[in-house]
Length: 137
Image (cartoon, rainbow, N blue to C red; front, side, top):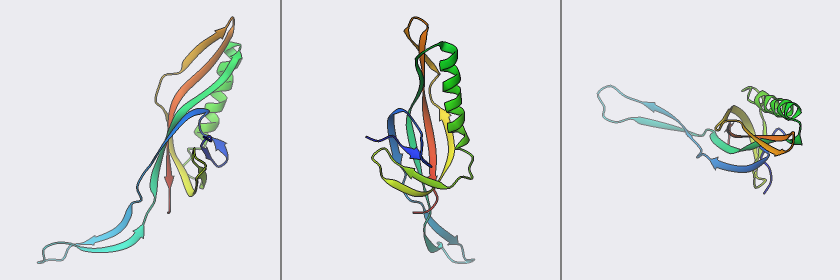
């Protein structure tokens, strides 16, 4: 299984799971005075949300200060993708391409976990959730 990527940047390091939302219809609903019901004008399909969860890990088997600095830098880089302006391609964990996507948000869904791997050697990991919007289908 591949690592999901947005704009060629890996979103997680391992444990990726995806939930592909349904396409949303674009409709105009009108009410006419004195008539029951609604008039519906369909205008095709809109976008959908793609939810990606996984683990971001960093700083394997190195000093705690260096490991923490590396982890924070990688999280800042990932957070920069959620600017709401960058429209780019998303490649899913099974390498399916999705075009015209934007990152709505990235959020931690667990506390930061620090593992001591050896004397004065640590690694860090955190579970994250990405919400990606495919603007058009």
